[in-house]
Image 1: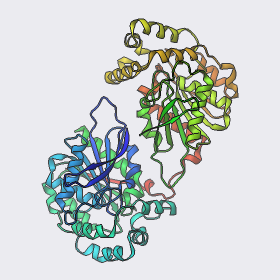
Image 2 (image 1 turned 90 degrees about the horizontal axis):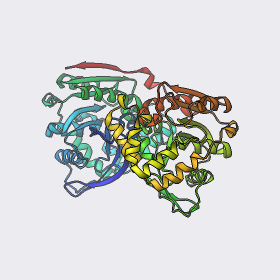
Image 3 (image 1 turned 60 degrees about the vertical axis):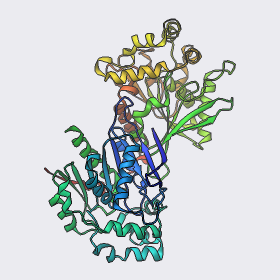
Image 4 (image 1 turned 180 degrees about the vertical axis):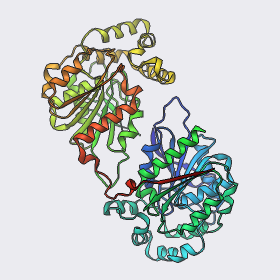
Length: 270
Length: 289
């Protein structure tokens, strides 16, 4: 069964998600949540679905302010609110716990949610995602200033090479189109929130199995950031993707999803 | 997600589209046609594997699944079943399609390849011969009318799925799905195919054709598969040793793998590798606990 639907979060915001389920109808299949990167939408992760949806119910939310999800009230964007968006969605899908994969900023949301609500996580996977954005990173590329001045499309076009490597022109156009929905106004709230609160050292509090999927080297993230995360994760599966770009989850989705399916199978077998 | 259209003789049919191919490319279409007493839903386990490479369309054939049961006065014949498929393809703007079919869905698949060759790119036939001769079908219907479908198909389920080797919940689910069907409609639908045998016509099938034969031959005419391979010019045949009739229900992964291997061989252009070599460079995995 597949559908795309709206649901209402507890603060009244209309949020959107895609749902794909080809599991055996007599089984209660585990839930997998795939969180897209910032400046993206759930569309970015479509190619992961066929690798996962025979064994798992796969839900791909549009993070609030992205895709078809509303941004929510001004001043209402907090780490706790983003965490609730995730746990309430898991409730909405009728699950106690979920395997959660987050890509880049989606991974930061997933990681912070895992610290707040660890009992809702069967596992956590972070692809090209650090535990927060060091203050130097967005400033380095003048992100917000450029997005505010030029718009999301132009900003993505100009930084495309670091994000999605040597993708074909058509692939690149789709990559930019699939950011449709997010606005500079929302990003002015979202990016500083993502950059606040580095939780690298708090990763040691997490007991669930954790996978780190890391582009080697990541053109947008210092190697040392990932190396630091490795030190603090207790139950770690670390997968490097040589030559991948920062938006690896949309650049080489099959390789990413296959590695993730392997991780999930291992976790499920425990 | 279910979609519907209304045929030229006024019957509302349901269909489903699944497509996980790259949105910036134009995928080829693969149409799945289910057997008698089945529905598009029963192909669920084959969809992800196929829809990663093809735009997959599944039709609930008239009187089955979420499609309307035609009223008794609406004529029923094999041309009408062909027409349903052609009208669906027209509705969706599909000029030409691959057809993957199980059993009776494959009767229509073959007849389309014979009579509308320009609409069919390839045929993948699972447990499908050119019609269904013999009195097996009539016996199911006669006995179901007196003893109920559950009793009749429960007793003979091992012809469809090897019960001893299969998750009992799958067996139970398939049986439940079989018994949801409208018996009066099945009398018309199976009745039509029971009186049909078109082995003499299949030499006209020009497209590449994959014949998957259930080795145990529990239903229909077992010797027909080898004869089909001889008669259809571009046929190839795979036998699943000791296979039962409903291969598509209990061996979905194997069916998908064989279908994709066949498609890759005959239509390599539909399986173009990624333009850049990243995935091939592989990954380095380290685990620490």
